[in-house]
Amino acid sequence: MLAKLFNWFGPGLPKVDLVLSKTEYAPGEKVTGSFHLIGGLNQQIIQRLECDLMKKRAGEKPSLLQPVTTVLMNRELDPKEESEYPFHFVLPEVLDLDDSETTYLLQTTLVLMNDAKTSDTDEIHIVIR
Image (tube, one colour):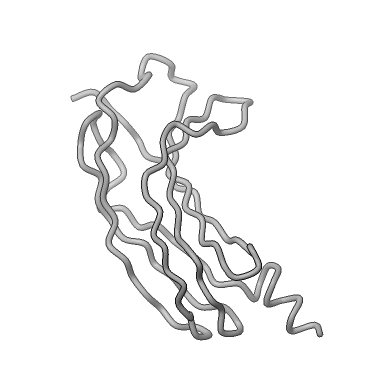
């Protein structure tokens, strides 16, 4: 019973990590990298992998700027198994870069069977070149 709880919540879940080729980009530039999946304590069925571009102002919750990708999977991930999936998208040409309190994030979510989720958030620095 305890193993099932760990499997559904927290330490037993698989991990997802978005690794970008760099952290600084210009508006309209292609962002590249890869999603790294690492299996948890038990075998899990992954339903999908989602990534969204989020905008965050100081003191506020992040808000969705645009969906980046959804990868439908329905695949098994064995304990401690490691998988990698390529990632790329083009940043919007128009972004609010005047406000120094605004940051941009890539929020990645791994959705498992029974709607269990794990996530990873990476800040992306957008500069004018």
